[in-house]
Length: 78
Image (cartoon, rainbow, N blue to C red; front, top):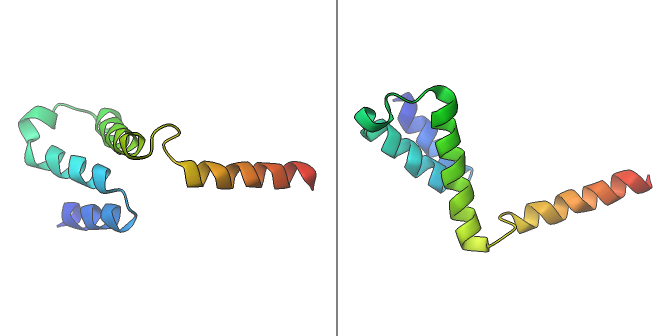
């Protein structure tokens, strides 16, 4: 049950690629069962990053990067 709520939360946060990869890992325990936490999390993050890069091109998160740049400028001028 906890896995299902985790998947729903990932989707609610618009991390659909990560949610799908997490489902794959849960469904195929023989292939992913030997992975440690770091490796499993790394695959989840890589999958989300790759999907976003494929969708938006580089940089993968243009709106976020623009906001961060704006914050950086605001912080250096104040």
